Length: 175
Image 1: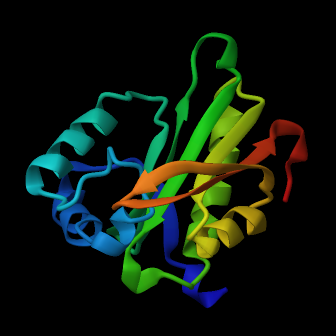
Image 2: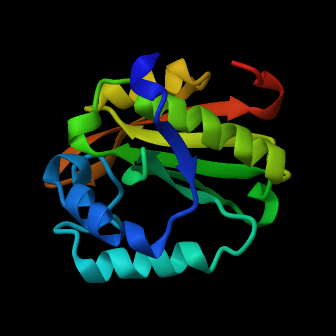
């Protein structure tokens, strides 16, 4: 697909700060993200995020989605602990001007492969708010399957909704 020829994922760089603030400071993105994703998204928020990513060292779990050299979104996973240590929770966001172009699916596939190649995880899962069917399609196109609907389990911006749990297992590669 021509729209994807300049798209890749890479580690976050300090030089990404301006683009990160410009694109992440968007209420439409925030409405579909966990509350730890701030709104408004400030220079200080971007600085903290970039410091966190830099501290990951040589086994990063969070990546910038870039078009050419510009960061236009993020994809990454957090490894769970204890008895859930073979599971990772994956998530992503794309700048609104780039929605509907297949970029999120492309980036999610790449991050999924990195997770399974680099870490001893057997399962990746994502929680999607029920009012976000576009994100459901991204996950399905990347080989994830809905396992559960947690009814009335989330609240965002005063709105109560369902969380949809999608998962992908290591043995389900390739797509």
